[in-house]
Length: 371
Image 1 (cartoon, helix red, strand yellow):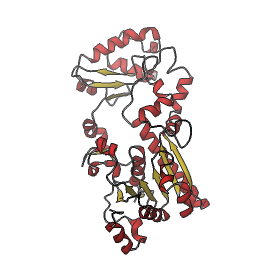
Image 2 (cartoon, one colour; image 1 turned 90 degrees about the vertical axis):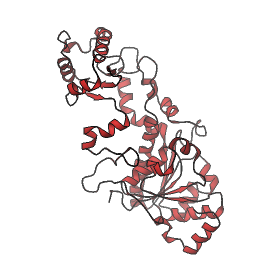
Image 3 (cartoon, helix red, strand yellow; image 1 turned 180 degrees about the vertical axis):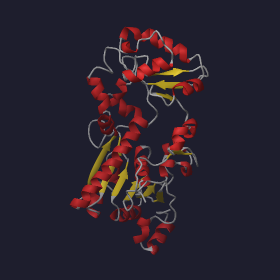
Image 4 (cartoon, helix red, strand yellow; image 1 turned 120 degrees about the vertical axis):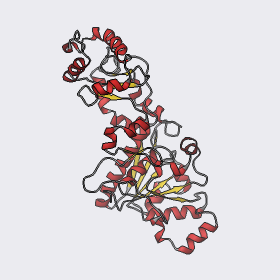
């Protein structure tokens, strides 16, 4: 059993960071029950396809409840009465209009932690505006730092914003549940992606304040020849990042660049010529050659892999980072020595329904309120 065994979560179906937060909690042993919409979520279908292959649903129970009917709202409130926390990712005001806002839910369960996942937050000028991952990280200043002194560079899809937001919501829920078990009082957790990206971007903001990124002078992170991606002869790519002098010196030695002085690593005048030289050098051999020469050393090297290649890489295989069935997906993390997380198969009726009379459930099913 994972470290969150016994924690009961009700997740209202959504897309992106809300379901990911629920998955993180379920991986750690929490009992997560998803209240799904009739017909599902349109964008989730477009992006994710078959719900049976949606890894964000792993380890969760799933109920389809028509929340447009009063009986559906009443059933949801009954489930929340036995829950520790709630996850919802609607625009501000939607849950209140359904009769499932914080006031109604906390009146029913004063210890409930009400987790709200949005991009812009519950208040502020943009609170009611639509947005997605790229917009949220743009507003925090992190995207503007991403290209150094040139154009901003787009990060991996939904990682820098949605995933950070999900982690923030999961952390907020666990923190608030811990506090509720001491105080006996629940509360609202307002997990805005812009807030979480900003706080988890503190390292980048610190480096920016020192002038190393996003400034007028060349940056080691974006302009140097030793922190970059390079294409190989076979069209594949590798990454290099030896920022520290001792790691850079090893790179120079392994590449047999006898005329390059490692002590001149931060001589900005030499950067353009050396970058051109390294670009040509790495294009002279396939990726496999550079992996054999540099991987596992202290030159701060890694090949740029596809998801399938990443799942098969010896390091990831040894650590069991991924599993490949039914699709490639990461195993639970972080690792716990005594109560490890796991991807569980859940079956049967959702445990939170155990306190609801069988006659009532049958009546709701016949009426189309519950599926």
